[in-house]
Length: 246
Image 1: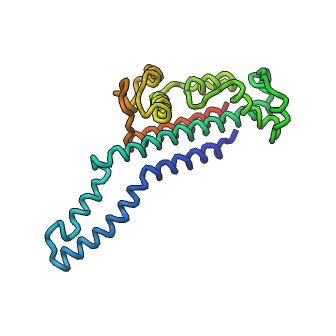
Image 2: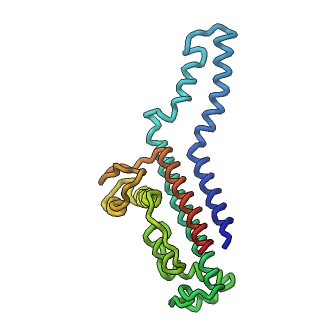
Image 3: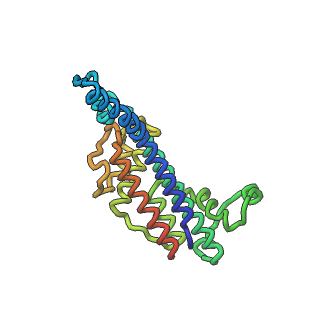
């Protein structure tokens, strides 16, 4: 089964997040280029040696803007928002792979899917907008309560319906932490409450938020966002390969 489109769509979403968290750097680099030229002109052509007058101090401020204590919380908000987007895109990508796998299972008369009993309303059937096999995956997701923002639910669903067993690697544990933090960011003021700590309790060893503790304010760095994105990318690519070969 070819899942190239699903993987490509996720890659595009990852790139959009990367551009979001690096937007300030792109703007800064444009400003740096202009101020650098002005600095060189004022110092070399006009003889302005004082850093306050030749633009040197402005260059220093621009280069270190991401490390500014005054802006630290604002950057943290941006990076936390990036984590929320990553988890959303990740769950959507897994859902796309699941739907494609369910459609193929129907066409192959796979009893693991065909023998599943679904309690649905007549309106659900009447409202079908595509061929039945293309809707089965969505029906399973909705009626069985499958959540792709929960790795246990994800692994359980792929094993049950398609016989695909996915290992809980370090990358998966990092993703579990990302998902738990996403919930806290959206619903609990970015605070690691008891629910978060319970969710990540068994997610060890890991490299993301290793020292997360109860009641800690969750503040992601750009390096952590990049780490989470890389782990999600490798997971989706591996999932697509395994499902495609199954």
